[in-house]
Length: 280
Length: 195
Image (cartoon, rainbow over all chains, first blue to last red; front, side):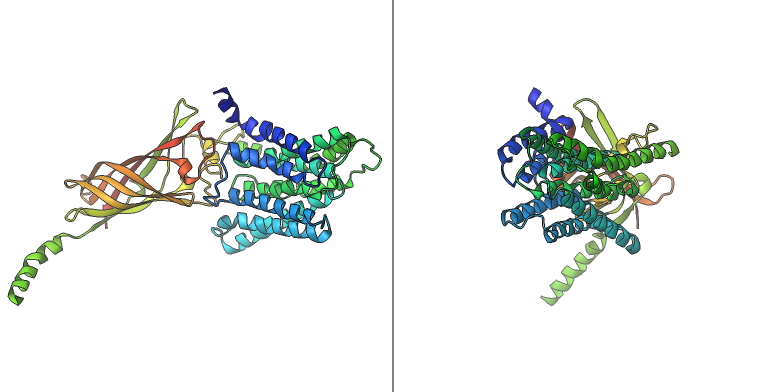
């Protein structure tokens, strides 16, 4: 009974269990190029404890989940083939993520007038393309940096979804962010990056912008709150970390830089909610 | 043989004229889909939808007919529409992808497949409910389902209460089960005026 109560607790579902699962898998895969499996295990854990794995009905949330798994599988296949984080591979994953964003909100777009639907669709595509491509590129040379960026984007998208009134989307984002954090912790504890695995960034690079798009298109999150998110991986790239010797120093510097735009997005959402309540 | 056929047709025809289906368009002001659901194993949350439309077609002579109710999901109301402290209200939450996902699925529909009569009265309705794009069979009991003249306007009308229970997880609405009960009790009050 106590175990059931614990497993039904949203914090356990979205944080504790994904963290433990990702940590264990992270240690098992630490010496390989496939740490992305540990990150995506966070998503598997939260799904197992919440809505399960059925794709019926094929809602926008289910499409988000399929896109995340699909993009991760493609990235791991490219990594296994030795292709690595070349520009073409990054662009291909980012383009696929952008198209997935339009696919995810297609049912919503079909109910809008044509000019508005085109605008929302193009905005969702561009936003997702920019965020996904930026996150993968920023983490391409360091799997530790990729994991930290993933943690910040995941947590940020989770909080934005919560402010946009969808607890389920929030749980998905927080679970992925926590799993990324676990993977970063594994690398910090080992004192070194994993063998170069750009794929570590892919699960959250795809899921985080999709969560933002859905929180806005199908929830209550104002669209302008998403504007700072694509700046997060850019801020991480601009943070000078070459002089930092220790992994935890890299992690904290990258995390600090990434969280600035994320905090900006969350601040906008918070202010918007506060303004909405005082006006209503 | 021809004379007996003509006689048979002449005898049957009047009954053919009586067996005519009557259509009643649902009055949104008096058609209210209600529901109740248990919250964290304690209290019951009651809610309803507004502006439901549809029609009742009934043929009492041959004891058949149909009922269709279209429900705009965005009209859901559980008495918690807006909160002054800025936190999301229950009604706002219910409209999100966690529950009714109104942006993707603006409508849910109950459509009957068979009306079951006890004497002249509709006793129950077999049909399907389409929610979140998923269609599942549902049987609703028809309580106090009557047809007659409105005592004030004298217009012909039919109406009653359609009562039943569904499991929301069957339609893919799994969020927060079992903290928020999987079982949902439906109480759809319908009234319609003859076309």
